[in-house]
Image (cartoon, rainbow, N blue to C red; front, side):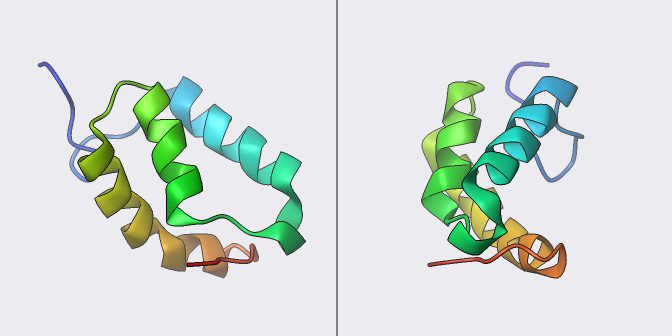
Amino acid sequence: MGMFDLLDEPMPGDVMADIADRMVKRRKEHGMTPADLTGIGVKAGIPRARCLSVAKDMQKRIADAGFAVRD
């Protein structure tokens, strides 16, 4: 399989670890934007448009985890 679909396939552990690490570094008060999450996915080799779509879908889950979410 070439490029994977983030909604159908689990993300690789290193990508998930990178997201968690960046969220901790940015602290709960600072918040994460869709652009922040998109940048992480692009570094993992996922197309920017797909990353932005997934990042917007993730906003609710991030807020539910207690992190601030900014637009």
